[in-house]
Image (cartoon, rainbow, N blue to C red; front, side):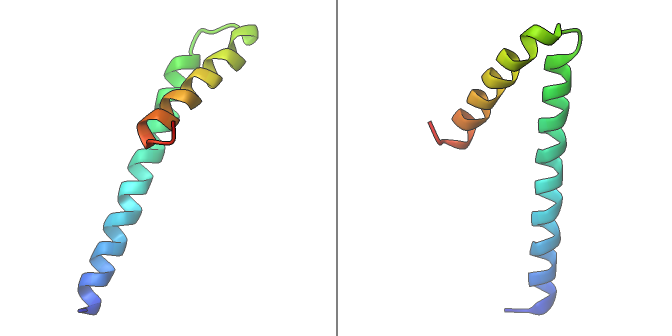
Length: 58
């Protein structure tokens, strides 16, 4: 395989991972915005279930 193609695919993979991670952080921040501290554990648990469902692990 051409080394330039391998490098391009690697860069694309890293950028995709960074975009997904940023989207997850923004999703969590928007869900927790304005929430009381007693509700945060329940919100984070629900978000974890949604992420597991999207990834296909549930």
